[in-house]
Figure 1: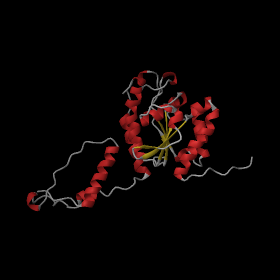
Figure 2: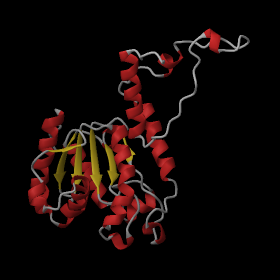
Figure 3: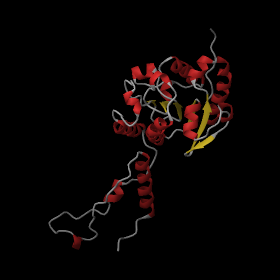
Figure 4: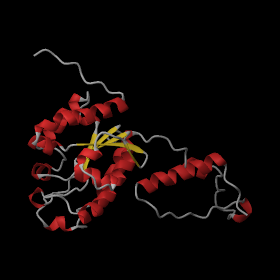
Length: 258
């Protein structure tokens, strides 16, 4: 009869398995381990009873290097994606995500545009410049946060992503979120908000409150591209960002005289 696992080791194993599940790895196998000298060949080295404990150390927050490696694994799994029709509709490249792999704050938009499709990085066009300014107004730099989209390929003509495209692509985003473990997610625009929250409601109802998203706080605000079309909503967006700043303990930088 197998010996019972030490409670601390059992907890460590459970946390390690959860970490791999968050990365999308579900299949495991167990190598047979001899439990006594009598069960081993006398010519073979005696198995070390500490092998499992050494392999599965108690889980702790992953260093950024480990998270960066985990994100690279997800990108490799994504490959030159052909899972939906967008790969046949003129996309130049996949736009995966960019930023600090250990960020406390993550912005999630809708889809890449022409500039993003060209450069392979999210939010680098006019809307991206506005997002950069929004981040700076919060007292942060672009490199401090992580930025991604619901889908990773540009829809033709920048049309709104179809539901099946979002459903096909979003599992990779979920894996990114699981690795980064942000304290706060900001959904930029209706498509991002409705896809993440599975709520069909207007922006006026979605904004101004917190949502629980898989244990992470999520706020909704306007997409920077929408703000370029309707600058009047920048004031409302700043209210949303101030709510996020309060949650993260951020203060806007002091204004300097021009």
